[in-house]
Each structure stands twice: as structure tokens, then as C-alpha cells.
Length: 106
Image (cartoon, rainbow, N blue to C red; front, side, top):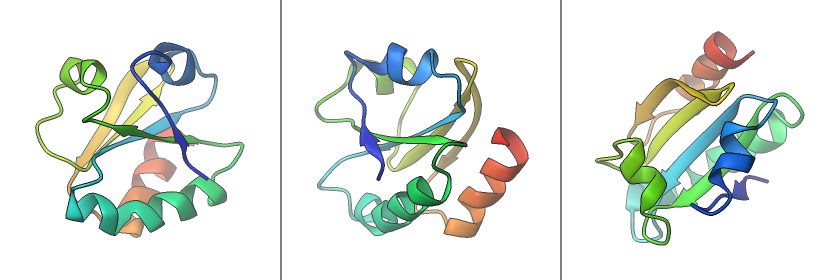
């Protein structure tokens, strides 16, 4: 299951993680965010031990989304070694996310 990340633990959970980390920036009121939520959960299970998949509620945590220039949600950002590697915006397909992970994370 995808874990929740907050502004308070973003550095330790994402930037200092030994694994690549995919962060789903979302909000409960966002229809496209809710649409891809099951896909994010499936990928969290599929990539256990290879990619850490986290979710950040942008309404409750404004600092990190602002720092990374989140202008639309859902936005998925892949971090590797504390750096942004790639970004996807919108309700993208599971295949698109898997392609991103296989190309950039593994």
C-alpha cells in the first residue's frame, strides 16, 4: 500500500531514501486523483522493495508541492537519490507509470 508522506517527513521519507520514490501529489476532492488511486495502490504492491510509492495530500501539506512547482493534480514525481528524475501530470495510465518506473527507476 502507498504510504502517506507529509511536509514534516518528506526529507527523510523521500529525499534520503535509498530506493527510488514515486510521490503522488493529490487531493481528496480531485476526481482524476481518485481515478488513479487504485492504480497507485496496485503499483505500490507490485514494486515493493524496488520503488517506494508515497502519496501527499496537497491541501494538508502546502510546502513540498510549492517547492516542486505543483500546478495541477494529480502530479507524479519520481525521485532518485534525492533528485527529481521525471514528472507526470494528470490521470495517466498504469502502463505510462510502469514505463516511467522501468526507464528511470530500475
